[in-house]
Length: 86
Image (cartoon, rainbow, N blue to C red):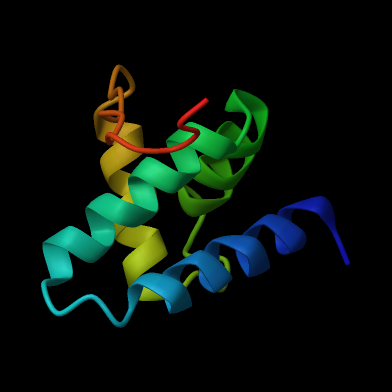
């Protein structure tokens, strides 16, 4: 499996998690936030590069989230309250 295919599979897994979100835009925002927060810039760029040459097997929700990230490179996810109480 190529590195890009592994990223596609990971993005689709994230999309599957957010698919339960009743609001489509909230699901796309959640996927974009996750990818921006936890993926390296190189991983994002590799997948966005593949997206520019066709969808490469990406499901619709992660595809839209990546397009959002491509169009808004300065996007900074808001940190939600919570986490460690220590």
